[in-house]
Image (cartoon, rainbow, N blue to C red; front, side):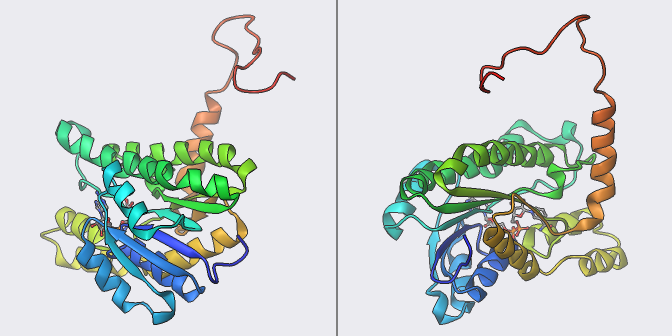
Length: 273
Ligand SMILES: NC(=O)c1ccc[n+]([C@@H]2O[C@H](COP(=O)([O-])OP(=O)(O)OC[C@H]3O[C@@H](n4cnc5c(N)ncnc54)[C@H](O)[C@@H]3O)[C@@H](O)[C@H]2O)c1
């Protein structure tokens, strides 16, 4: 999609943080905005702060509920040109063994099923139209996970896997798919997680806060990626070394087949050579 001017962009989790940054950047680029959030009043506040030219409309949406998505589709009465599946939650830094099952399920319901619901609601219309772009917000934790964030990383790996496969599936219909991998970015979630982790060290909290990227710049990177049809949006290059080390370790595990004499044969999903 060469330009966002005159296009309609739907952003979930648009009530602040990265979603609000994406909305503001898309407005800068000339798009009309549909802002959706579990907290509809926060989405309305963000909409009110955008320039009038963005004709921003705000809606309450629970991404976990397909019925809520259908109600949104009926309310807006159109298939947006761009869908940004950005709503997400974290459960703070804690070891996986300290994560109760209901907390794990909530993470998956919002971060994974919520993305699937958005795609199930609007991608068929994009395919029928023969154009559109989907941006799914993952995290650097989808590239190089670390201890104390296992459940969140699992949900964001799922977003990456889903997005990579979906890109292949929708490309013939002219619909693009990008995955966003933000690192630490200013938002309510980032504040909350950091405050819990360094509650009794105000100086440390100040340093963490100073490291938070302005979400508007994350949004501008999203706008560029949509224009270029880029598959991946990396905003925080400092994670490159960790990703290289992880990939090197995985590649190092490739050797001889486990079964002596095994040769890779026909695949059920790829045409024969
Ligand atoms: N801020 C960071 O450092 C960071 C880093 C990597 C990835 N992310 C991801 O970026 C996305 C945005 O997060 P953020 O940091 O801006 O946090 P945020 O808490 O400011 O924004 C998330 C928004 O999602 C909304 N939301 C939560 N559950 C919802 C639901 N069920 N249905 C609809 N909306 C719901 C919240 O009300 C909130 O407004 C998330 O997917 C998050 O995982 C954030």
